[in-house]
Image 1 (cartoon, one colour):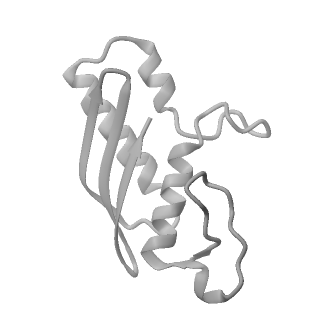
Image 2 (cartoon, rainbow, N blue to C red; image 1 turned 180 degrees about the horizontal axis):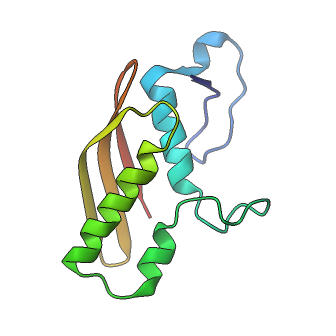
Length: 118
């Protein structure tokens, strides 16, 4: 997998040489983060596409069982990303209004750390 690099805002950067393209675990990690950041309803062309975590968080106050359901959902969602072979060491936290998730993804070319906050 080869992806174009992006800046801290997610804007695509110009590619002056093929060496600046993202490859291997770095490219898979970027794709996972892009998929996590696309919330359902954000894409006008297909509103059903995207991460449904925000809708899950809006439904009710979270219990311990809900946090496990969120972890299962995020793990399943990440596994559907092309290039991801396995998702390990998933840690979910909800502090105040901040939802965070961290995990490690295994790819054919190595592993990558994923950290996501909403």
